[in-house]
Amino acid sequence: MAVVYRSWKALTQNAILTRSVSNSLRLYSQKPPAPVVPLVNVEVDDKSGVAVVTLNRPPVNSLNTPLLTELGAAIKNLEDNKSRGMILTSSSDTVFSAGLDILEMYNTPKDQLSAFWTTLQSTWLSLYRSSFPTVAAINGHSPAGGCLLALSCEYRVMVGPKFSIGLNETQLGIVAPPWFVICMRDVIGHRQTELALTTGRLFSAPEALKIGLIDSMVSNKAEAMAEAQKFITQFAKIPPLARKLTKESVRGEGIRYMEDNMIDDLQIFMDLVTQPKIQKGLEMYLATLKKK
Ligand SMILES: CCCCCCCC/C=C\C=C\CC(=O)SCCNC(=O)CCNC(=O)[C@H](O)C(C)(C)COP(=O)(O)OP(=O)(O)OC[C@H]1O[C@@H](n2cnc3c(N)ncnc32)[C@H](O)[C@@H]1OP(=O)(O)O
Image (cartoon, rainbow, N blue to C red; front, side, top):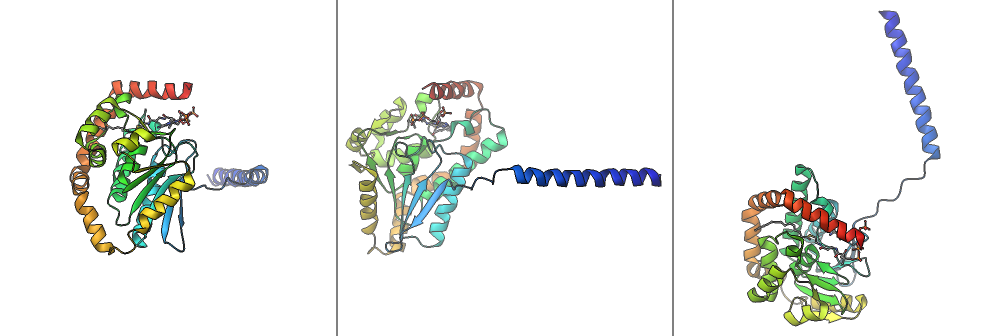
């Protein structure tokens, strides 16, 4: 028995030695690890105290769980530091955000699907009810979840005329949840929301301006940033607590909807998205995106 033990021990020690030598050799031959690039960049202007939060997930800033988690953390950080305001924009020249990452909803294990949706819910709520002023500087296309992010800000400046924005869910065979609808309705009104959502219409920037989906159209990102700063500056003289409580009052329906219905909303999402018919639809939509 002792012999067996000794030889087993020798064998394992030998294996450990071999492994550590080969690991070291592998380390020498490996490239240095790629730097971790944040999916969301936050830069706070020293003078104005305004934070520029830039979505940075090439190519199209599709919203997956890690990006939504980073965005939620960034908003919490600004909240904790009593931010003067936030401008939400994109590092891409052509896409603000392509909306929810369809790969997070297609063929996804249930626990991941659930984590994805709850992260979206909580990040959305923290953006929608943030105490500081928020502006979306929409410097590219902004369909579906991208439009939701923009709608959740207090003011929208969009680079035009060639980019589009809207809630196009029905075109994909999915349904915009009630809180998406509330956001849209509060910005463009009941009638326009019904027309826009039932058809899944994407609006060009001039069309969006006409129905009030965006507040202003500019011709480049620099102009968008300047106008966003200007919007936030007007709050310098408004007492922050009065501003925050007023915003919460105006946005009360959306806030209460989410607070009271988080679990039901998750259940409805899970039931809908896991249906074979919806999965097939998402698969076909992904294929058309890839074929372009
Ligand atoms: C009654 C209550 C019911 C409640 C039920 C709740 C159910 C709700 C469920 C879901 C809600 C979802 C909302 C969404 O946000 S769904 C996402 C919708 N998004 C879109 O339709 C936009 C799709 N993308 C585009 O139209 C274009 O990509 C565009 C943004 C215009 C940019 O165009 P372009 O610059 O030409 O880039 P490409 O199209 O070539 O795309 C580059 C690569 O990125 C991939 N891609 C694009 N969009 C997405 C996406 N949203 N998710 C994942 N991947 C995406 C694309 O396939 C290309 O990939 P590759 O390079 O590999 O070919």
